[in-house]
Length: 505
Ligand code: FAD
Ligand code: DLZ
Ligand code: SF4
Image (tube, rainbow, N blue to C red; front, side, top):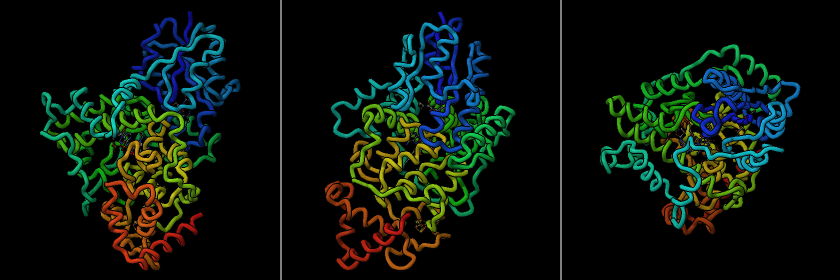
């Protein structure tokens, strides 16, 4: 009896539930490059190339591990360009009696999976590469008034034993976030990211992507990404030894032209399966045990993975299919063109879009406090913002992108995830970056010629949404601030914001 095992582009792990469930002798692993996936939204060119190249290299790794692999390339003339079409063809080609696969990370695909077998049964297994399964997260969430990430994170620390000394957290504290908010230091240098010269497989993929998806957003070349498990491990080792020691201190800092800072840039490698979340955390923990990285950095990093990453996935499951359509604040403005072109005088926005276009990546504070913050303040339609984030980032899949954008970035879920909107004016960006120094706008000005748009937009956002946000106790101080402006100043702020928003294309 032959079993077809479809392995998707974000399932590039040898340790995959479907591979454990079927004896090698009866299995054919099916990998498919399909236009349906590249165009379900028009993904960044570099993201498509990264995944196709990683998929082709993973197929070789599977073969080396003894699996029979059937790999369908995008330009195969018989390719039906859809998962369902390719699985149906493979079932016939191999006279298969069943299909066994692992649950996908996007509702669109999840809903189709039970029917993937066509005429033969299809078994869909839970994705056990995550630390917390669907049912377990639902049990944790049930009956809680607030789904606080910090509560979830502490449980995960206990469960994994990471940074634990018996029952107590290492260093006597669960969370060192207060130490992790330093602005960029003057004269600080930033280590380069590892670069990998494309091999023949990657070069062929780059040509293929240029030919088929050359109109999509983003730069395809230069392409220096890790695309194999070995290269991914090199990236991990490089991060742990070179950047992790300063990751904590400067986690929230932004510097023009410095796209990686001390961040790991491992998210795309973890999300596609080339690295596992626990091995990444163990590597960081080992660095702390060996005295090579301080506790605030290691705790901060581990919290992102066993805390935030698992938590947002849990939210994705319990929030359900309509999460991406939520719009608590009733925001309807279309996404401005400069999210694609980067052509704006706001230097913070231009820098964040440039990095995104160049690398299909931007770090967390650029995503949260610049790109999403602007969209929140300007009242941009959450659906359009969410689609933009799904398109442009190398690590974006619905399970992780939607909660981060709809919940954390835009408060469009009305506070299911965040206890208050992450809204900030220019002062925050000025404190945490060097952007404002070289900007055409004046970050110190609220109104008048050359005033930083983030300032009037921030106050206008609060005033505009008072009916929905005014009773949030974490915003009371901000509303006090607004109420302290006299009527004339409030009028000037609103007028300034209206002129700016009116001119947004
Ligand atoms: P580091 O700063 O080095 O953090 C370490 C790791 O922690 C990351 O590699 C990632 O695996 C994990 N992590 C950190 N924060 C989060 C988080 N909030 N959610 C999930 N994992 C987290 N992350 C994605 O993986 N895919 C997305 O599509 C995505 N969209 C985002 C959209 C918005 C509006 C915001 C505010 C955040 C988004 N994030 C997303 C989370 C975070 O910005 C990225 O994981 C991070 O920037 C990746 O860079 P890094 O690997 O250098 O992260
Ligand atoms: C993102 C993506 C793209 C662009 N192309 C493919 C593909 O051709 N074949 C594939 O197996 N996976 C691809 N992916 C990743 C899928 O979109 C992802 O596996 C599903 O959305 C489920 O999360
Ligand atoms: Fe951004 Fe305002 Fe600073 Fe310019 S002045 S970089 S628009 S925050």
